[in-house]
Length: 398
Image (cartoon, rainbow, N blue to C red; front, top):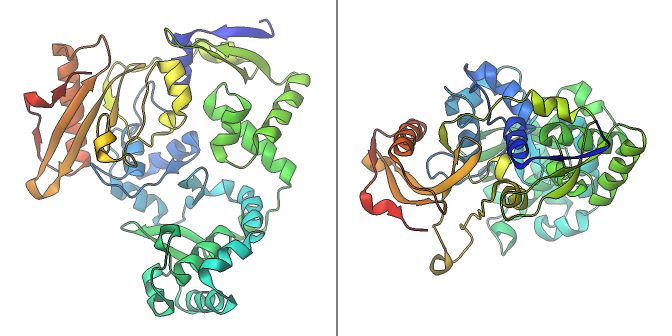
């Protein structure tokens, strides 16, 4: 194979879906199937908004045939397999990756002056430490005596800011939530000693971050590699890619864009062509994805490769929204075919479809409607509601 070649748009879409766990046979099994699935994805982003179900549950459900939210709790029950920390956002991460967060912890410690503006002096930190050391796992509400919400920065009070500082510096860990409320405990009681004591160098962490990101992306630019874990800068990932290319461990490729869209240059492993020839085919089923799905995280990549312009509008003023507050993308095979505004109205025991927009030149054919009805039945199960309300007026023009 030549040192540089073009990955067709069809293959590029299939590669993204395959590496993102959205191709081939759907994952089956119960809680035991989750650890390998999350390991394949790298992490699962957390989000508090519960329109049908929270984002982390929705992400796993779209890939796991029989997933139920209780399976995540069961996975963590005996020997926690996941810890919570930041990638680009708060996420559930396989426990074995914990050592690579030490550099992130150090970076936060170097910014203690900024944090001290929120938690005040060392007395608040010491009070929080002493409480958790003696009482064990604690929530922010257990520290109301240290002061409530104050000002901006999410309205954190001193105790919440102290908890977050201690968590983000690695002194505390979060392995579970109650509802969506973090439970903080000492890292020494929560994280296996071997992982806490491991000290990978900065170079080793950059190597791991770039290599593991590329494994999950298939082909990527330095920015994509940097963004995946948010551990290395673009300059650091660019330096890594150049070194790997010189040593013959990476090649230049071009991913062909969707019709009317520009493709882009990237790097991949030398055996990428073999992988492209043996990828699982995208399933023909139609599925609803979470707005926070890892395949959708890079909006520019989605637009250029899939021709799908998607933005979540939760932070857009209502009168400026094009579609709605929380609209779910619809993936059929290897194409995004539309978006749907729906909500689990639990008080009425129903999933209510508010709006459905098909992509240009696509229609809700009889076959596609059958696929959508099947997927809505699955969404109703995820939302733990019985009925589905889908009025004709919900079908919108683009």
